[in-house]
Length: 125
Image 1 (tube, rainbow, N blue to C red):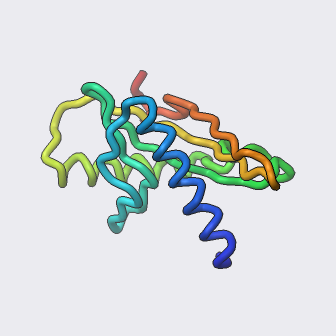
Image 2 (cartoon, rainbow, N blue to C red):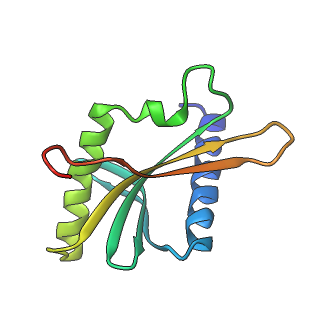
């Protein structure tokens, strides 16, 4: 991963976090990392803990950002979410898995697309 790609991703995550905060989400953690994986943003709204994967792209030439969050990536996020809940001492709560697409415009405003409940734990819902 190049430095430019890392900077782009970090800028997208910053924008996504600000977007959520403007909508009354409380950011509980950013770049939460454990052996199981990483979650870009952990947010809380009401009684729901939301695990957010942020994907930033300059174009959709290779598909939408959300399409990059396939089954394998979803499973890593779910495993990491279990770690977070255990470490935070949370045994019962509503959980949701969101994807946020951030489109980096060339010389124009960036766009954010929030997809609440983008995926679920298999066997639930």
